[in-house]
Image 1: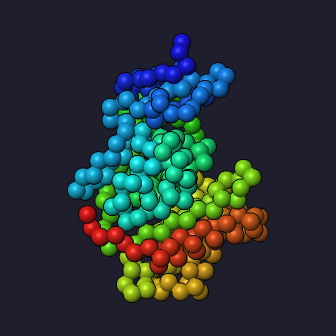
Image 2 (image 1 turned 90 degrees about the vertical axis):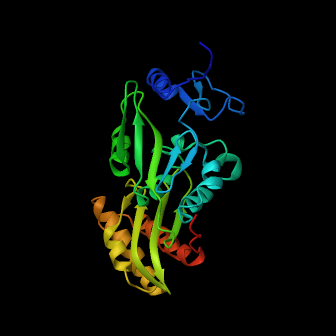
Image 3 (image 1 turned 30 degrees about the horizontal axis):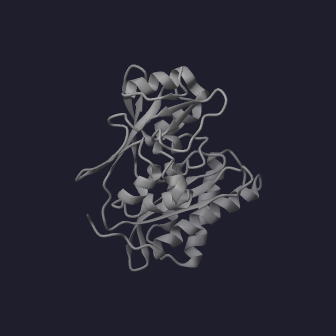
Length: 279
């Protein structure tokens, strides 16, 4: 069997993934520099109809998961800067042009913080299997991936509603290094002068998959984005995440500090990044 496989359909890819499992290495095209290690099988996903590309509808955005992060950064500019900020913080240009959304949605990926932004967008994920496909909301998808998808299952596309152009976005990612999990936070909010209107915050910690932080969001609502209010929101988010993880504040002060930094910096990026015009 050749080392590089070239499936032509979504179902054929699912069958290859079911067969090779951990040995499978997905690449966006066979012309890259990837070379399989011993026992690895390269799978070129560049020629599968419907797996790559971005559809910009009037109300809905659709991203095929074979799309590279570089293409997302260049093309998906209507999501009020949220995905652009997220992708730009996760990888350098060379890596972005080789890593796909499909790879980034693997919980073990270095680029899994993309999911934090997708939680805030209320994304829906189409999961393909060897026989059929199903659509999950992003929360259910993340739970399913944490528990382990069935052999051959993989996300084939991501969809989300177009945002109101008046919303401002902020994203920040903290990478502790030395193989430790990253921590990220994302924010969408209206702004009137310097006051947050209807803010929503999502957080991914080293112990939790990305989730909404309703208490932190509420703490920022109708508050001016001052240093004191940002600090309070960050502290609220950290306490909320630790509670969800079944931890006490004193259990992991380092984790708490990482969450606080991510949330505070995401909020401050809202002030630095104006909402783009409607498209």
